[in-house]
Every structure is written in structure tokens, then in C-alpha cells.
Image 1 (cartoon, rainbow, N blue to C red):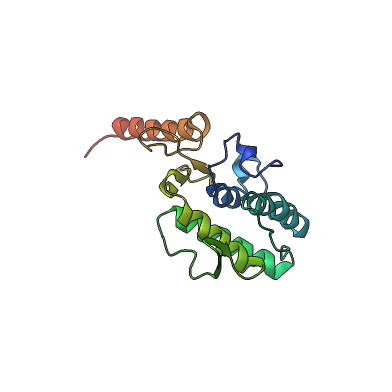
Image 2: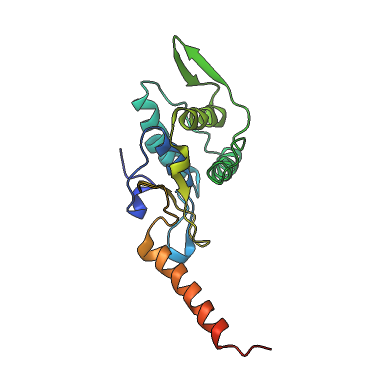
Length: 184
């Protein structure tokens, strides 16, 4: 697979179809880390679609439709990214209704463009028995999606050295400030 939006965070991709959900979320910008939006323009949308969506479709033995990269298509893709965020936050209905087609005993996304991609995302989520391990970093400044490979599924930061340390430092400073302030 070509350079994915997930690999720019130094993360391993999620297993199976979950990588498509993870990769869509990880197109988000993180200005505080100098990370740009990978869906910023038409060329970016086409590149991401061909790399990530094309790779997902190829692994399933199917073809992805052409991306809808015009302004309306891009806005729809950004809304879909927000809906995947909601899915990872626990809203199991975030992706709404989708079209799928069944060939033999195999389900495939239905429709074209964003409808097809929504179907692909829903199929990926449905086929994964470990969707709960795909999480968004708890650092409010970092919307990175990561796959929790810890034994007890307890990770909350995509990287404990960057996001975890920053959060722990803020909490420690808040505790010290609270302890140092005079009480009434």
C-alpha cells in the first residue's frame, strides 16, 4: 500500500477492513503538529481515494468507483469523515443507511462515489469483530485514529510519548496549582 494517512503518524494500520475507517479519519489536519489535511483539494481527494480506497477494493477483489473530487464531493467526504469519527466515539448508527449488493455469499458496497464508500466503510465495520479497538486519540488536539493492540484494550493515546506526556503534564500542573492555591 502506498504511503497512507495513518503511516504519517508512525502507526501500524488497523487489521482487515478497519484500515479504511482508520485511514479516512487520519486524513484530518493537526495544526498543532504541523500535519495538513490530506483531503484539502481535488488532487488530494483523488490521491487519497486511489491509494486508500483503491487498495481496500483491490484486497477484496473488486474495483473502486471513480472518486467524486469536485467541491460538493469533497464536502460530502469531509462529512463522511465526521460520521466515522462519531462511529468511533460509539454512535453505531453514525453511517446511516447504505446500499450493498450480494454476489453469491459475499456482500459488496452498492452505488457509486460516496454512497459506495459509505457502504465500504459499513461493511468494514460489520466484518470486524474488533471495531472497539479502533479508537481516536484522547488528546483533544489530536484527532488521530489508532488500533489498540494492548492486551486489555486500554490505550487512550495514539502515542504515549507525544499525546500521553502532554496530557499527563497538563494534569500534573493542574494538580500542583490546585494544591498551591489558598483554600477558603
